[in-house]
Image (cartoon, rainbow, N blue to C red):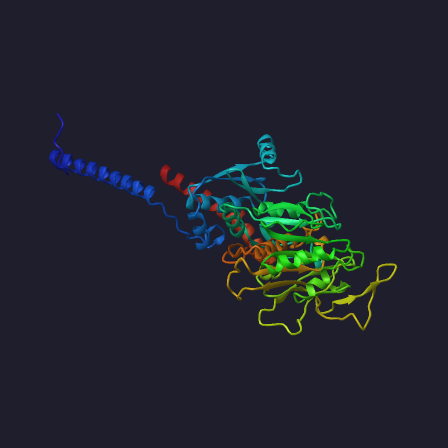
Length: 498
């Protein structure tokens, strides 16, 4: 016969049922709160940036552009997953899709899925040598951002003999936002390439003189490309938003020069790339036209020995504060056989005279040479040539107020004393591609592409340890931590045995 327990039960059956009921109600209330919270969160989605890494945060300018998206945009990341920028690119684009449901992100790894990657390359007409890219597709209108455009590099390390070039900034947000903003435009501006004088051909794939890559840059910026001639009765088309004069070899007829001057006076936009080498050291007629616009194009070659790789080329790192080149501070432009392009005061000019600003200069040891010897060495004439920081490019503006967006009747022009630097082989060197992109943006008056969204700096963290400290860390990681886990397990085993 069992004896009754001397300890009475802590809970009566009634109290036990009541406690169980309270627990059940509490669980149901918690589930209801979680469900309502998720329901409200789904209807009122909001993300907050708490990370110190600002590469994945979106600026107000980007959010304004995304709010204006009304049609679906397909974003294809054609990247190798082992690429150092794969993580930052996909992470940032996910933030874009969170902020705008109209963006649909797709990732294609051409190493793991070559068939899919080949299909994408064929659909978007990507060249076979194209590196990792991000494609923005809005109903057949396409903008491509290359991986090589997404970073700024410390090019000065090459001149110091260092083999490794560090990435300084990540430019994902300004380039992605610019691509989306370009796709929102209803009507494409037209860039007309002047031909018939030996100019660079925008359809040519020639590595040195071809301009097909520059034409691709324009199409990627949603600018149509067309070739025109001005001989006879031909005129500059009315829909020409940008006239490109790229390295003419022969002289332009007076009638053609008058048409160009009239186009400028009526608010035209011109990108003039004038190579003394390409023109066989003769004038093309544009030199005299530009004098009336406050630009003096020298009949010379420019040299800068401290900033040259082969003698006849130069690496330009000296820029002004003009909006075109301000984002290039700390970068460089690579040119071959450049000529001087200098702002010139127009005698008796009125208050509406063109405003001419220099964009890029050589270093302090630069100089001009009016002729070359038989072996290519510079031959300077003290009466005509000069030394110092030689201007290589200028921007001209007439008919608009400083700091105010240009209207349709204002004239703009960029003049560069070189044309091969935008050739297929050279445009991808240094910051030539970026310079061309910024110049086109300014000429077409696209301020949203020039400012407001800055590249994000890349922070590198380095831990310097002495040999003694390194030995101590090694013993901690390989001895102390595993030993502590083993000792704790042994202590638990001994207590259980006891």
